[in-house]
Length: 210
Image (cartoon, rainbow, N blue to C red):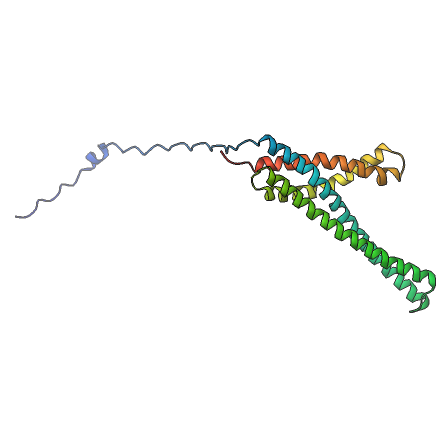
């Protein structure tokens, strides 16, 4: 027995059928803010103290490093000028004055190199002191906090160096007492304040999540 053909729905019937409504679009859930545990009193004090101590050491080493590089370049340039001048005057046998200048230039070169090495050691000690103090306080990722704070401080100190020099010149009329004597004092005070703020802010960003 042959199967009966399936009846084809008429266009009128198809048009009369209601359309199935699409699923409503669900609104996106708002991002939940990341909650972090507050710093303990010991961690807060340690971050402020680490910033004050470590940044003071780093700032001294950083400034000495920059000045040593500038002095090294100046010494090399001075030595080349003296050598060229002596060759033009007396060939390979310069007179006593130029020979003394040339010897003084070589001595100054090694003094500057010593300051350069000392500044690098001081920067390394600042990193170690900061990491040790933050680790002793139980701060999360103390070495990462140290390196981030050191990187920020290196950039900030370049700008603040000229601020310290400008303040020293404003506070005194002497062209020697301002840049030479007063600038280190202002830089010391400013370094303590700036370092404490930088280390404390970075320590807050690295708190444990709740």
